Length: 167
Image 1 (cartoon, one colour):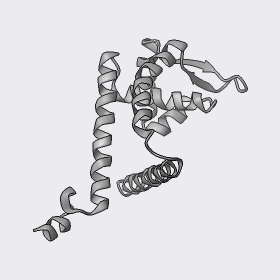
Image 2 (tube, one colour):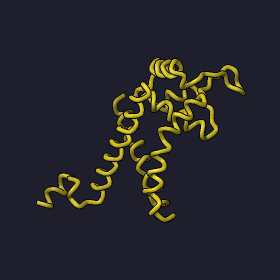
Image 3 (cartoon, one colour):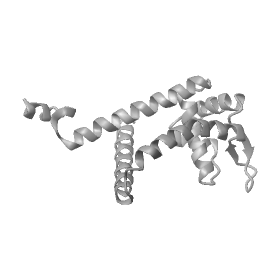
Image 4 (tube, helix red, strand yellow):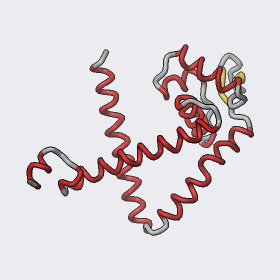
């Protein structure tokens, strides 16, 4: 029986890859639930939250991001991106400004209140993750970083391949 379970790729097959895939799926579901709970509490759709995260990541890199770059990052059409930005701007979560170095370019900014809202979301999760991760030494953390990096790359590669096949 165990052999047939392994052949079907069941999580209890003992195959370490199956266990990793199952755990990654569970992590994905839990982070989705976490984000949805936060979004519901603040009247935000999942795409709105994703947009805020992309803009917030750009802010943390000290980069400016345009609506077009946001559309690419989220894989949205220009009209869908405009709808997201209009909702976020109406709620006071995002501002469109002319670029400092190029006045023809529109850049997206987050007001201080939105940055605080992001901290409200991520600080408790970050603290709990930090507590859980404290048992890992530097070498283990390096391995985890490498694992997550290659997992993201593999997921992106397959997603892009499937998107190209669908064209």
